[in-house]
Image (cartoon, rainbow, N blue to C red):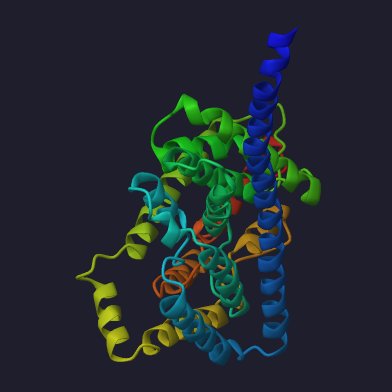
Amino acid sequence: MIRALRSLPRFTFRRASLWYRYGIFWVGVVAVGLVAVLYAKLIDWGYNAFRAVQHEHVWLPLILTPAVAALSVWLTRKFFRGSEGSGIPQVIAVLHSPPGLGTRLLSPSILIAKMGISFIAILGGFAIGREGPTVQVGAALMYNLRRLFPRSNARIERQLVLAGAAAGLSAAFNTPLASIVFAIEELTRSFEARTSGVLITAIILAGIVALGLNGNYTYFGTIEIGAHFPNLLAIAVLLTAIVTGIAGACSAGCCSIRPNGFRHVCARCTRLAPLYSPRSAGLIIAVVGLVSGGTTFGSGYAEVRGLLEGHEQLSPLYPLLKMASMIGSYLPGIPGGIFAPSLSILAPGSATCCTWSSATCNCRC
């Protein structure tokens, strides 16, 4: 009895330490889910506000979009270096670099700038998405919780970053399985049994928070296929996959132009006049948006969802115009993702295949 009483404080302290450690982790993951949902609603509200103003004043983007581009680039380069782009490369760099890089790429100021500047950009009609930035936002939010751990080390920091990034993706897309694959193949490029439990727990909790606030939703809806599935449909799907793969490679190549190419010219122009190049990009986005009838503004999610639901019609030139708008939004280096715009680049062709399959195999897209 006396021996048991002597071991009781040690046992209680150990249990309290475990609850303290994992309690902070769970609270952080729930916070990632809440912030991801808030960020999604903020971006949606910003795009709807821009579209409402653009419908009333068709030519306003010619002034508004270049001004927003100049403001966004100035804020990013002057105060928030490290928040550029989608944010996924920054997370990968933190996971594969020596400790200390996270304090610069995953700081609280970067977290706020990622959401704030991308919101400003979407108010100007930029063709950016919020899915990639949500990964960096989730990683930054979890990384800054390391200060609450009694004995933080490099391994704990790495687990926090990985779990936060995967939780952000899970909450953004409602795709828990895809988030696990993304974390293993894209972020860490390896499977570690030590972090698998932490990763899965983070994804589940963030997904539950997103489901509780948004309901059980699918990103682009569902496809119902009847019992008859013709062989020609498989050929159409294969051809669509090949064409979209080539288009994706071309757009990725344009967004990662080597320094001796067009981006080097933009850099020289930027050194001579810091706000000239962003204004040019904003003007290109505005002109392309006016030519397309306003369909290339924003991430492209609404247009693709409308095609799948059958109440949206897009021009055959939409993929090329959307690609130009996406590249123009990406090259200035403001915070914003390219995942959703990339999905919408070949939306008309995909919708054609969907319509053909509906008439052929008695299915509904």
